[in-house]
Length: 345
Image 1 (cartoon, one colour):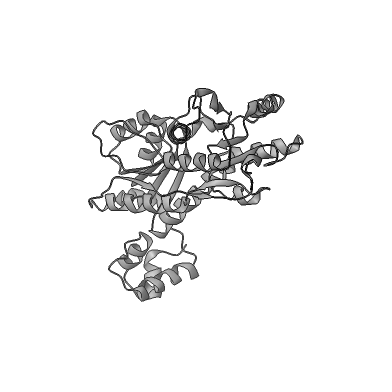
Image 2 (cartoon, one colour):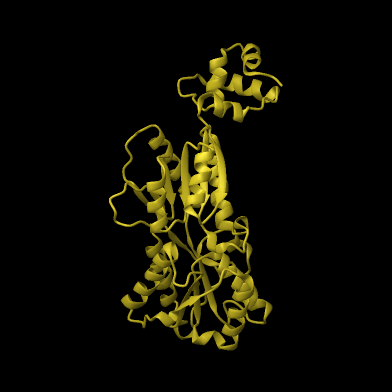
């Protein structure tokens, strides 16, 4: 196996320069030198000895990414297009900044902290954590931490979180359904009660109903299980009950919206002719399904780029402000919502 010293000799640079390229420390290096070293590394198929690197100087160049969505235990996390998209975006951002990503899925904070410590990760990105777990992560490690889509206690801790205007997005979509003549609208999510972003989206849903003079009661929130068999049993009963009189169904995620649309259509019901459906996320599923899904758009890659940028600033001991970032949302109007006939003109 070729060594760093041999790579340096071939490229005509010092071994320390090669080491700087391998470790992403290239801010004082010319582009020509960096490209020459990278080309030599590729041409000679150099493989870094990460174990030796860890033992040698204690710097792992590893960023740990922890998904805390344990309640989706039945479903491989990569099956949900939102999770696969944000994982891919995080990996790209982390790699392009000279680090390696280690992905771990666990709802157990202690387990997540043990993994981070044993691999000597230099930073952590934690997705989807609730307030109690966020507090425990902050107390359990000195490793720089950035959260995505997480919620916190007002406990004085310096949390850094990249999220959305979730409540506003749900408000906007509910208002749109109302303008289309829908007065009986249900909101569906997989929490009982809803937690985190689902709770925010539910609150935005109820706020829009209230502001537009429509009833807003707990019967309009429907729990839809993340377990396939339970979800299908619910949808079967829901159809027998003729959607309980609801004319529009607002799902907390595109995954459940599209999954339910498929179930309806497999059982002879058409969207939006028999019921209107909308979602949240604007994932790849929303344009691959038929009819195409009306949904709340978010730019998932932005969450990844902001999270990694904030984490790197913490690693460089720079001040970061603001510590809580909420990204914009917008409506993506497609084909799954119909205007009620009473408003047609």
